[in-house]
Length: 522
Image 1 (cartoon, helix red, strand yellow):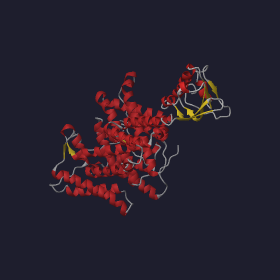
Image 2 (image 1 turned 60 degrees about the vertical axis):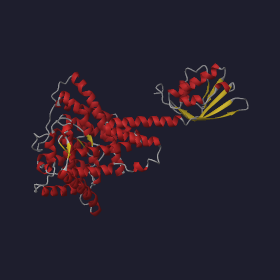
Image 3 (image 1 turned 90 degrees about the vertical axis):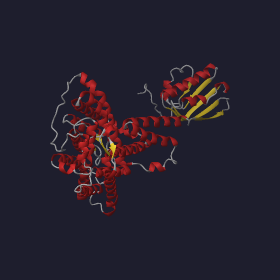
Image 4 (image 1 turned 180 degrees about the vertical axis):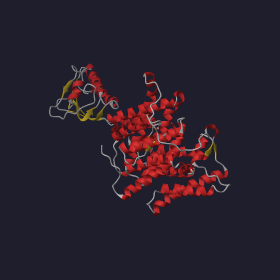
């Protein structure tokens, strides 16, 4: 397996290392938050961020893309933890990894190319909105129904530090690119927060404040390396039936989010990743998570954007992020705990700004209304439901729109030859979307006794098209008229079983053999 660590130059190594450190700082609070969403210990989420981030960076198909514990996977598996406990979570994550490995071996990653561009735009915009809304929780105190918005001095300090982080992230690249702007902003705001905290009148909310708000029993983020752990569940059919639905959904959500993020990074970097290899990398990562007490995950668009914007391009950036995260947990937890939440929120707000496809707003009056509708639809469903549902709905709607447009683009031109036969020259695609329009193009009762349909500029694509031809032939036959089909593909002629004795089919021998999609031909 070809392994590219990074560009073999000092600039590439420096950029990957510094951007990886920046990403590691942003991974900590999100991994902890997603762990609580899944009703598990923060360390289980941090271990997932480490394992998924490291393994996918080494084995995955997209250098520079960051993976870790994600909210999409956490939401899917949360109900399993509530109903059966954390050990079933580990078993489900292991099975999730096996399913993703199977997808990679079957080379299913290539099908991400079938996702239309409007769906991609909707996915990106929806995800940017989701990232933005997720940050609003940092402006509240308490959890659940008890949560209340910050007020007074606490709110103003939070807003000021967020704005300062965003300004520093924006201005530093204009002066120098020697250090990632996000890392510089986090360090600067952390030092300022420490200075303000020396005054009793100021309270700067830190990562540790956020953790204790979620679980008051946690006093430190310090921990050790993950250890091998076989899930304590019965290895029988009952267990498989319990975890299989969760594993299938989590595997699908994880791969869809990873492959779409891969495509987005491809566009930004003007390079090309390998979808099938990414499936294998994600599968291996989650399989390992299942046997090392971690919650599993997938690619993270927010952290991937931080990495790319900070100059991270090679595998070293993801490896550095994973190793730095684990180093923070083992020996640097004291530093992580004092980082102001506002600094990380500011960085994520910059991610939102850079992730959202602002160009899609300018395209509203320049692209078909159907594409605009799909962009908005996918964005809304991504925010209200989940990514997998949004992409599935978007692809289905896009396919229906395509079928409708193609179905309406079938037409005929008719003429009468010297023998009195009427010749119809058909143009377009005959399939399920155009079968009805095809039938409406003909009026057998007004046609002469001999009718010819020329398929030279038309193609038949499915069984619905074949059936439309059969039905039309029967209409002419009932009136005692003869129907000839010329320039029809040999495969289509063979499938005209029900009209075999009724239709005069002529297939020119020198024509190309245009194949049609049919179970009989498969």
